[in-house]
Length: 486
Image (cartoon, rainbow, N blue to C red; front, top):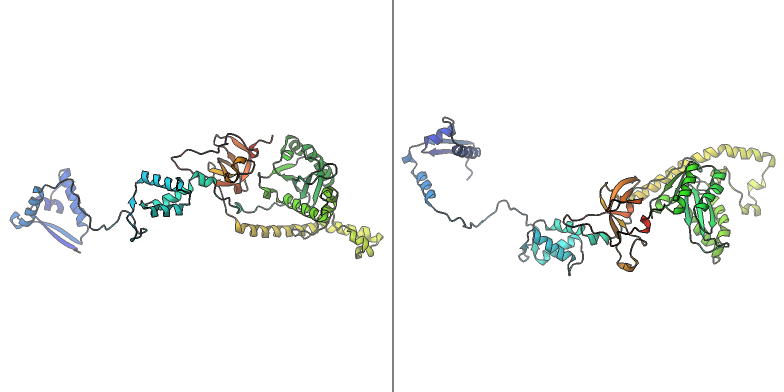
């Protein structure tokens, strides 16, 4: 009605004076009425109550008597013609669609379960589940959100979900400040049987100069690893500060660990099935194998005989990371190649035995400068590589206490499952952070797993509040990856 000024007439002097403040209000009942009237008066610019005689207020008096004499049934239904503020938003419902049945929470859970995982269910995603429920003829206000949550927390959907291959952490370049400070160690095999029954190759690579040392073995045990380090590293290049390796029992066994501790060598192990953590060793293995393939042709069994020549070729090849050959960074000058003996180069044709010593001394004087240039170039190369790598990362971080699933591997799944085997196993609980995207895990009984796991092999696990944890059928048996190597 858009009324802004209101003058009210009453036949009760008490009520008029109580509102105007002339009389005190006694009794809780009258105080409540007065409070309501004062609240209503706040909606007007001007509001006043004045007392008039009863005979001048006959219409209001008759209306009050009529209301008190009527008896209204308590179960009467009053139709609502127009709702100014609807309790729910129905804008997503098509006006041309048939009527939908509105469900309460217990019914909605039953419908979602049957449509998602029942006889006609196909464990579809949240959006498709919502659409299927709506097309079936059901509705409740939060059905879109509930369908997304139900699908995301489905145990079977999580265990069989696709494995993301995007990196989970930024690239962490490994820096070596001087030659032979840090080595990467790895085993390659089995290779074709060479003379003497040799089928394995143990290789170590210097992170600074990219110098590779490798040797063929019949088998690689702790005994062979210790002998190789003594013969090819300690007595030729000195004691390294660090050696990075995987979790093979040859590298982290008691004998190897005690040997390294006695020489002050720090052994750094990479996370399981994550060769990127020992990328330098993996890169060197790839170079050696590729070169052996090209050299051997059909005579694969001669790989052990060709191995020294493959190493020589690699040591005299310029590396993109440093801009120098490993040989020059180690000795300060380039090696004489077989070609130079057939077709002499200038340094052989014009060599002067008297000035040879002076020339070699100059090379040794400039080797530090050469290494500084290589160090700067390698830092720039690593920055460019990291920038390119980090464009495709999809960060996955976990908090202590989070439940996670771990990627299933060939030796952790039941062979009888074949193509139907789950892609993820668990759940496990995050116990602590191991650094650089790696985490320590415990099983649901609180027993710690012996090694840390990189985030690329983990995914967050969600469960519904009303369900118990669904463990793997073989969760009571530790897989090979979870066996303590000691």
